[in-house]
Image (cartoon, rainbow, N blue to C red):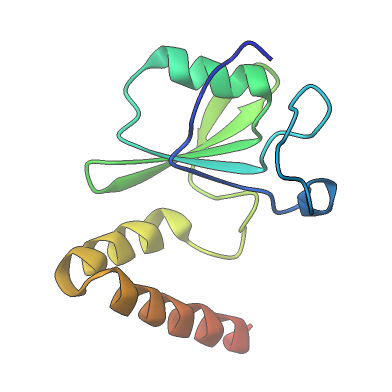
Length: 124
């Protein structure tokens, strides 16, 4: 693949079994990540690179807001819901926890996020 990108983070969720145990991925043979996360993505070229790789879901966190982009054929469509996490209001939750991390630090926020997710799962 000639598209060169380096996301802030990427995750294999549905396709995790395809990449378990691999030290290096070859995107000509391996599936693209199910979800990529960028902060302050400003370049259209980078967005096009994610399209070229076929990353199904791209989250962009910028200016205190989360934007969910879902791949639809050859372009990203803005979405209010994550197909990967349809039962979570991630567009609201992520900015809240990002702000919380600025207030109390990442470690404390991750603990609070874990409690939040476990409580949400127990309620459902």
